[in-house]
Image (cartoon, rainbow, N blue to C red; front, side):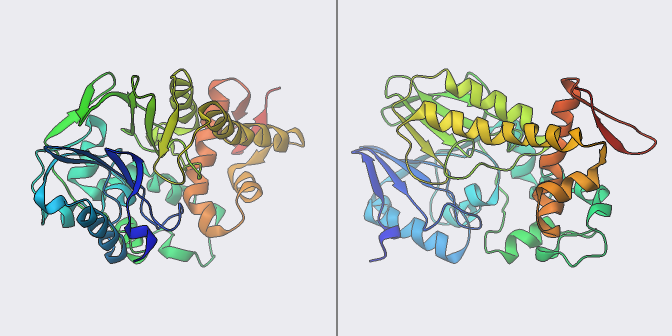
Length: 326
C-alpha cells in the first residue's frame, strides 16, 4: 500500500495523514483525533481525487465507518485545507464544522478569496509585469477559482455550525485546546494549543514552508505578531500543516521570523543605493513575472506598509518612488 495512505501515529489517539510533499498544490496535513465515541479532524485537505483517496484510505484504516465524525476544525478557508470537505460531507455527517469567525465569508462564498489574497492589488500593480506571458492565468483577468482547479486543489463552499475567536476553547477527544488567532497568511487563521499536552496545531504559520502573506490577511506585521504570540507558549511538539512534526519550537519560530524580517532588511538595503519604484523592487526580490504578480506583489506591499508604519521609508505620491528614511 502507498505509504501516504497510512496514517502516521503521533500518540495513540492522534494520527497525521501526510501528503507526499509539503508544497502547493499538495494537500495540507490532516490530523485525526480518536476516542471511543468517534473521530475529529483538524483540516481535511485538498479536494483532488488523489488527496481525497488518501484521506478516505487513511480513515478506512482507522475504521471511520463504524465511528461517528464529531468535529471538523478548519485552520482557515484555503483549498489545500478545506477543499475536500464537500466530498467528506457527502459520506459523513459531523456534529459540527468549526472555523474562525473572520473566515466565515470565504467559507460561505469562496469567490471572496480574491480579496483576502489581494488579487485586486496584484492587478493594480500589473504594470510591473505588463506585456509578459504569465503562468497559471495570472494577469488582468485572473480567475483565482480557476487557478485552484487547474492545479488540482479546487476550493469549495461550506456552512460551519460554529465560529470561534481568540480565547475560545475547543475540546477534542482528550485534548483541551485554546484558540489562538494567528493572522498573516489568512485573516482568520487559527492555531490550537493544549497547555497540558504541550502541543500546538500550528496551521500554516510554522512548518517546512514559510507561508505567503497579504495585507488583507494581516501582512508581514500580522504574521510576526502571530509568531510572537506562539513563542510565549510552552511546547514539546508543533504539528504544522505542511511538513514534519517540529520538536524544537523556539528554533522553528525564530527561523520563520528571521525569514520574514530578512525581507525588511533586503528592502532597506536596496533603497540605500537610491529611491526605487514598486516595479523596480518587485523585480529585485521575485524572479519570474508570474511570482511577481502573486504572491510577490502582496508580500512586498505587506513589507512596505510595515516599514512605512515604522517610519523607515516613505513614498513620493507624485513620482511613485520609495525612499529610505534612515
